[in-house]
Length: 334
Ligand SMILES: NC(=O)c1ccc[n+]([C@@H]2O[C@H](COP(=O)([O-])OP(=O)(O)OC[C@H]3O[C@@H](n4cnc5c(N)ncnc54)[C@H](OP(=O)(O)O)[C@@H]3O)[C@@H](O)[C@H]2O)c1
Image (cartoon, rainbow, N blue to C red; front, side, top):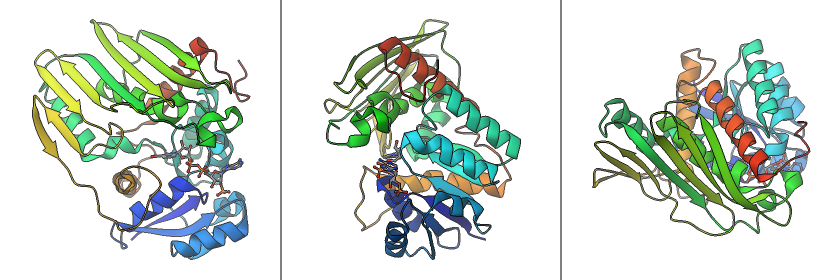
């Protein structure tokens, strides 16, 4: 039986997600309904992706009984309300990163998922790329010995993207792209909470973080040094340095197609598509879609690779970083 996907929003990432779904076998994945704030846009978007049902409100999608899981691709600021509504309507949810605006909101969502006994995963698609799978295998084999230093960076000029710079749209480098660097370190250190989080950075004129460098420090002389910026492009690489060797992830560290292990490079090819997409390597979204299908087939309520605990820790660290930088959103009460 195919996994029946409902899609929440007719935006840029929803388009890419749908193109990625189309690269997977139709007997495994089907987009069956789409909701947007306006019915006309929902209908046009659904038609362009051969989706049979279109709704002019997210509520109608929440009430549709013929859906196995909803993919949420609205702006970060809208994640909390949309996801909560879906969970309360007993829908499984895959929600774009960041799961919500702050730790409190993330806690509300993880609690609601547990309470309603439904599946919830933050769409940290990076973790399902073959390169990330290879990293996890190498680390579990202790192939580079004891990991001491992790580096990751994500920088691109995004001043022309309203949701990246406007505070009321949840703008800022950290929530948009810094989350990829932090999740990388958290994966390498196996979900361990750092003993300290130190951040330095600059704010943009709108009051959102423009450039941030974070040091996560762990017991046993271990560190992660992470930089994100919406100001300039960076090499966008990552490295994991251990007592017996090194793993390097060439650009783009959040959606990589190659890995260098002790100087030897292995390349992977992405699922092909002839359709145009909004973001880099987006057919790789199919890896997380297939992972979610496998979780649902097993009756899991969270992913073993991107767990609810991982999302909670990621949110805690981002909140601490924002506190140190002085970035506060209307959603932050404390
Ligand atoms: N995994 C990835 O690679 C990746 C890449 C890019 C973005 N993302 C994440 O995906 C989410 C959406 O990003 P995007 O680039 O797709 O955004 P987008 O196209 O600008 O907007 C997505 C949707 O949000 C709603 N929306 C936009 N502006 C709004 C406003 N002013 N008021 C109310 N609703 C508004 C719209 O929903 P309707 O269609 O219902 O009107 C829109 O289609 C973000 O959380 C982002 O972090 C992930």
